[in-house]
Length: 201
Image 1: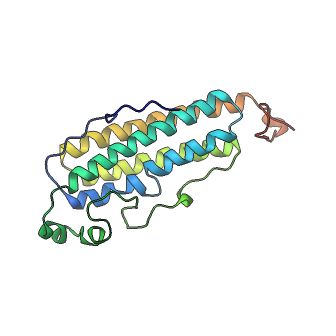
Image 2: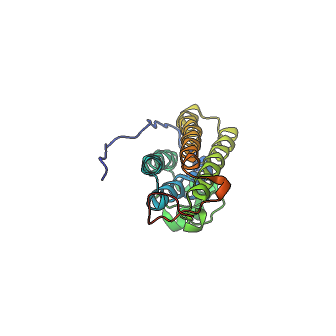
């Protein structure tokens, strides 16, 4: 159960529309390393995590990723609002506009629609946490790439906040991995059964 606060986790105040930037930033909504995939990855994986503390980390970060999705969507919305038909065509936003007007629809910067194949939920704690750490680094790299392309400080500001959170999430998943490793005897190569709270041989 969640308590929803009707505000963004970090403010977005963009005064100059730029649909070209929106098409780039769109990848962090519905792309392979975006916030939608991250939220679904962690909120799915938590059910098979046999350690309550680590399941709590997955829940916390999965919930925060949904808040980040809101920030990304606010950025895209503010970059594409009140466009003229001429601006839409000149910016190359016309293909997206024909299908979605200026509505938010999850896709990668290259136009690939969101798919659940963008994330993995394996049911093995070590495998899933390594997946999560890699996902956070890929998201951080994507934000790095966006910051190399974006010069508008009003856009860069929330993007820098989101990038910073990817680093924090990577560290939290590293802590979770240590908890899992402390609870198994790697010399005996324990396997996990998600039906039990403890690893089984």
